[in-house]
Length: 433
Image 1 (cartoon, rainbow, N blue to C red):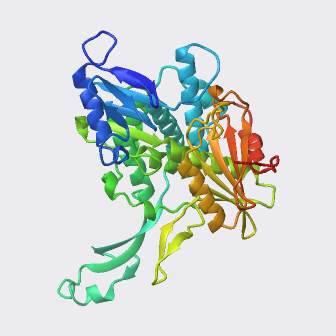
Image 2 (image 1 turned 45 degrees about the horizontal axis):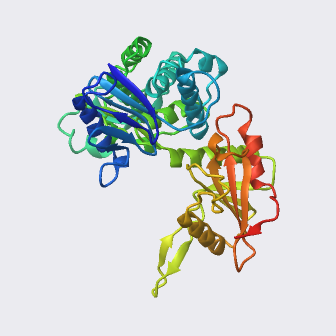
C-alpha cells in the first residue's frame, strides 16, 4: 500500500523518479477526488491534476484508491520535533477539532494509545469509532418495540377485525393479529451496521480489521440497508440510549453525512474529506458557546437569514447567513465571520491581506443586522509576525461601525475557550481606513 501525506495547498509530483508517484497511481487518486461533490463543477476543488503534479486545495482528509492513499492535512503551525512528529501533532489537532464539532468525548487513555505519527487520519477515526462501538455493544444493543401484523394460529396482541372477516373469512384457523415486538433491527442499529460494513472494506490496520470483524458478527441479524437508504430521521435518542449519541455523530462523519462527502464503490476508491472553512466555523462556534456559557450572551450559528434585496412582489433576494451571531436577548451585538485563510501583518500592506469581498460582506452584515461590531476570525500562524488576538481594528467610513481582525492559535493545547472569549471583549479604539 503506497501512502503519502501532504498539507493543504502543497503539491506532490508524479512521474518515473524514485521519489515520485507513478502516473497511474496519481490518475487513480485524482479520479477518486474528482468523484467527490467537493470537487466542484470543474473537478478541481479537491485536487488540481496538473501535467506533472497533484496540488491540494482547501480540503483535507484521505483519498484512497486501489493500492494507494493520499492524506491531506491542514496547515497548522505546531511547534518542535521532526517532520514525522509535526505531522502526528497536526493529526491530533485536527481530530480535536472534529471531536469538538461533533460533541465527541475522547478520554486521555484513548489519546495516549493512538498512534498519531504512523496511522492516517482515516485509520485513527476508524479506531475511535470501532473501539467505542465495541464497548457500547458489550453493554447491549438498543432495542425498540416495532409494530407487526401477521396471521397466527393463536391471538397475539389485538385482532385486525377488517382482515379477519375479509381475507381470512374462509380460514378461521388463522387469526389476523396486530402486535408490538421488541427488536434490535431498528434504524440506529442499521446505521451502525452500514458503518461497520463500509469501514471493513477500507481499513488496512490489523487491529481495526479485527474489531470490525467482531462487530460484523454482532450485527449479523440486523438488516443490510444501503447508505443512501438509511433512515436517519427515524433515530430517536432518549435517556435509555443517550450514550449512542457520540457513535451516531461518528457514523454521520464516516458515512458522509457531516462536513464532507464520501464516495465508495468496491475497488473504485474511497474518500473522507472535510472543507476546512466549514470545520473551522463549527469549531469556533462551539468553543465560543463554551466561553460565553456563564454570560448573558448567546451564540447563533448560521442564523439571521435576512435578505439583502426585496423584489417588487416583496420576495426576498440574496439571503445572508453570517457564520456566527452574538446576541444579547434578541439584539445582535456582534457578527463574526470565520475565514480559514492566512492573514498577513506586513508593514507595506495596510489591508493586512484582507479580501475586498470579505470587507463588503461584513459591511452588508452590519447594515442588515444593525450591528456596529463586525469581526473576521482567522487561524493564527507564525509567519504573521504578531501574537494571536486582536491584530487590526478599523473604522468604517460614514458609520459608527468597526471591523476587527482577530486571529486564534488552534495549535496550542491550553484552553482555547478562554482565549477565544477575547473575541467578544471590547477592543481598542479603531483607526480609520
